[in-house]
Image (cartoon, rainbow, N blue to C red):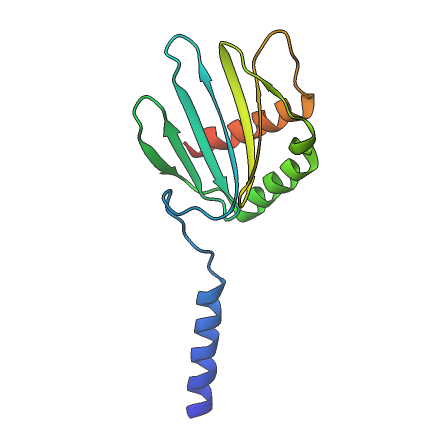
Length: 143
């Protein structure tokens, strides 16, 4: 009886250990993707934060409110993190906002790399635009 109980307890604890950590906006992990847009008449910005575990947060600069959106799957989040790595944002150094602007930021601990675009005079890499559209599509399904 005792070995069965120990084995059962061990299995339960191992399954509990597999569950991914849940973060609050105040305590985010070191790896994240930040993206969004802003400008226009109001100058307001919408910022989204995607974590590797699939958690999503949204902040609006006018309301100053941050809400947690519905999670995306870990598999989908992993694809996003792989894709942003392949973009090599650190080699772009692109900072050309317009009246209406868009941005993607990759954060690894203390290292932050951000690209901002929207100016009619400068075109960002098409890969960045496509990735941004993919991220925003993901948000629309979870908002």
